[in-house]
Length: 195
Image (cartoon, rainbow, N blue to C red; front, top):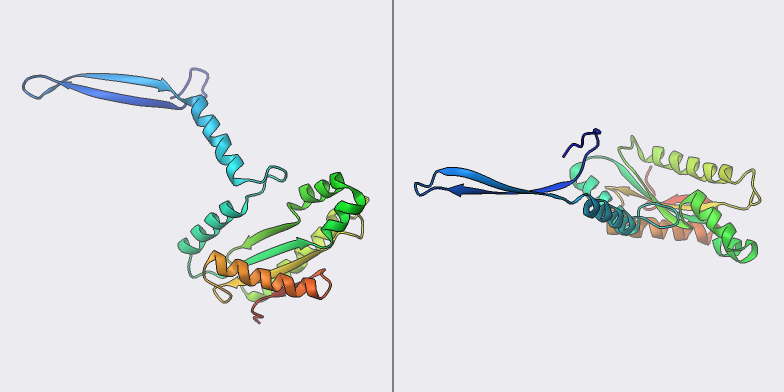
C-alpha cells in the first residue's frame, strides 16, 4: 500500500464475500493488516542466511542456487567457475594478527572464494580474466603493509567442458586449484586444459 508520503508499506489483505439467499454477492468484508515489520525482518534474515557476515558476499549455498539457475536458463553459453585462494593466508593471520587477516578478507572477499563468469567468448578469454584477477589482487595491497605479500592461486573449470552442474564444476576447479598450490601458488590452471 502507498502511504501519503509516497513510500510503500507491506500489507496483507483478506477479503470475504457475503452472499444472499439467491447466492448473489451483496457485501465484501475486508481486513487490511500492516505486515511491514515482519517483511523487513524476514528480508534481513534472508540476507543473513545467504551472505557471509564479514564480507557480505554470497555464501556457498546461495552461490550454488544462482549458478544452477543460470545454467538451467542459458544452457548453450560458455561459462567459467573460478576458485580463488589467498596464498599463505594462515601465515598472514599468524604473523600479522587476525585483524590484518580480516582486512585481507574484507578486501578480497574470503581466503577462498568463487567467481562465476558468464557468456564468455572463448576458453582463452577465461584465462585472460584469471590473469587480470591475479594482477588486481596484488594491486589491492600495493600501498599497504602487506605490499608484495598477498598473492592468489586460481583453479578454473569451464561449463560445459569441465562439467554441467555446480558440484562437478566446483570439484574440477578445486582440483585445478590444488595443481597451482602444489607448484607454489601465485598462478592459475584450467581443468581440463582447453585451448
